[in-house]
Length: 295
Ligand SMILES: NC(=O)c1ccc[n+]([C@@H]2O[C@H](COP(=O)([O-])OP(=O)(O)OC[C@H]3O[C@@H](n4cnc5c(N)ncnc54)[C@H](OP(=O)(O)O)[C@@H]3O)[C@@H](O)[C@H]2O)c1
Image 1 (cartoon, helix red, strand yellow):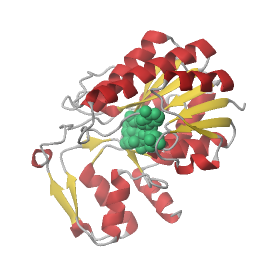
Image 2 (cartoon, protein in one colour; image 1 turned 30 degrees about the horizontal axis):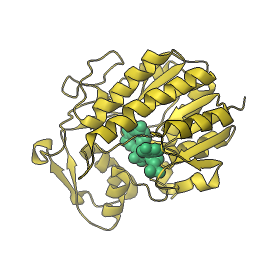
Image 3 (cartoon, rainbow, N blue to C red; image 1 turned 120 degrees about the vertical axis):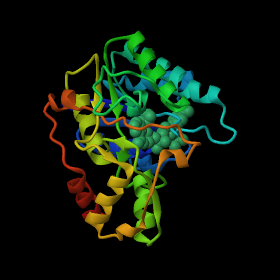
Image 4 (cartoon, helix red, strand yellow; image 1 turned 90 degrees about the vertical axis):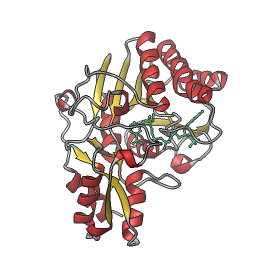
């Protein structure tokens, strides 16, 4: 059944795929802030999620059935001049306000959290009840966003999302896309051999999130990851195999060689809970073949 879906962060890496996927069978309003991306192709509005009055008005006029809240300050390390208070205000306070508005309007809230909330040194294939020790301000504020959502009401889904890969749309670029562009131009790329994740394809994540928006699943925290645990280097190897790029362009590095980045050894996700809801996912190789063919 068609739903009224409000998407925050509609101009982001994930948000633009959500716009496409959600609009297939639903009425959507998608929000952007500094970039417009593909929001221009949908019913959209420019809004700063930290402006409570503006967000309140959007809720009042749309009365959404579902809110997919992806908007966040997402850089793992603060950018030069970035004030941690702004990160907190965007990722925590605005999330709390959105949860409260969802409660007021009877909207189901899908909060896009991250695998980085888990303790990255504890081992692999982490279940939803695994130890939580975020290693960066970004991850810490995403976890605090989760807490605010849970404190507010029960009509939520928290999706702890793994590293997203694929091709960013318009202005948007993820690490995978940059790696693809470098390798295609025969340039070397440095990749961690000691950082493991269960990456999920952007399109696959968007499809699952939109299906979850339709389903009667609430009051749950669910890992949203891919089916394979790989290091960053192994992901690069799969890309080279599928795309026919020269593997000698891949340079092995360790996290110790990039001390400025928070060390996250292994936040690969156990996705039994997700699988129990009936989702069928593809291997990384199948997914990369699919997006390269379509590109
Ligand atoms: N990328 C990943 O690998 C990954 C992995 C796990 C979880 N996640 C989570 O998934 C979500 C989406 O990530 P992403 O990679 O798509 O992020 P992204 O590309 O950095 O996009 C962030 C989005 O948030 C919007 N935004 C930021 N501050 C805002 C504000 N004050 N008001 C309104 N909008 C604001 C941006 O709008 P403008 O660009 O228009 O300013 C943009 O649409 C995030 O919540 C992130 O924590 C991402």
